[in-house]
Image (cartoon, rainbow, N blue to C red; front, top):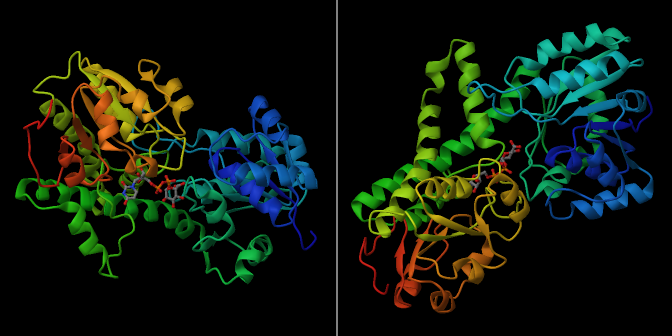
Length: 450
Ligand code: UGA
């Protein structure tokens, strides 16, 4: 193996494409693999099928430099790589809280029999603790080079929408390894980051696996904490937005992930909290993580609370009412609608008989596919046309700039519920709107103009 190991990246989702393109931008030769032939063709043509700022430029650069290519062949992938990164999905199982590892298992079952020279297989996907150790011996059994195909784990902490930055300049790098050789190879792979002074943690396999799921569980806990406190604020007529600022000013607490609102969603936090609970139960330590059940319940409770608030604001029933939903992605800066709190709320209201019109700056195509039953509009104003109520459900920055006067000219009534605390209640109330947000003091049911 030369100083510059050749890399492959298996799975071209948010994580895989970003990892492949960033590694190519740092001078590595990289081959991306996916079983989806259409995706491989699009990526090979420089087309990135996801919304991730800065990524398409990096993919195009990689392709034209000749350092980045994509394939659908396991044989070619195995032959090309000194280091194979596993970036396939590990969603929640259909039959419970645990993680579904079938994509990883399928991938390794096809790749390992082709591994004919020494290499590292590096898991990046989030897996239950203990998975890496059993996958390592399985790969060694299947691979023609036996234990010269060594499996390690290096979890990824990138946030969607910030993937390029988080990959090139992460807060920390974790490598879970079983040998000095694997550590040395991964030090070469992460050399640019290590030289830039980014902390590197060399751990065993189990600690590396836990580093990821524990981080996501902690972030989820912080969000659910402030959301639980929002309910108390509601009952006590206190203001959770001010309270969050006060708490966040304590450096021991910190303001990050203390933003109250409709709660967390997406393809990571919700399923990772549940998979952590499921794995703890398998290990006989379920009691230790029992509080994560509450974290999950508080999070889902925000969605029902929003539905209740909307129903109350509409006089007790949403049937036949026109509801304008602002936001469809699970968070701003992303087109991902997996477990989106916004779409979940819209679906419940739709089930109760409301007519839903949605606008989102980036996630319209994905939302249309996930919820074809809604009407979609091309702008905030078009979505609000004739609405009985406006629900702001994803905190896209452009929603903070909505002019209450202009919006009020097209709606049927001036009612708004701010699910993400983006608007200034005084400004909206002064413009004649009934402004509601859980945990923010103010008029509860009386519409000022309707
Ligand atoms: C999350 C983690 O932040 C990443 O470190 C991790 O690598 C990734 O999961 C993963 O496991 O792959 P991501 O799902 O992209 O990243 O989204 P976040 O930015 O973490 O936001 C998660 C959710 O929490 C969003 O729905 C967001 O709206 C919500 N959130 C976030 C809040 O409700 N309040 C906050 O203060 C912060």
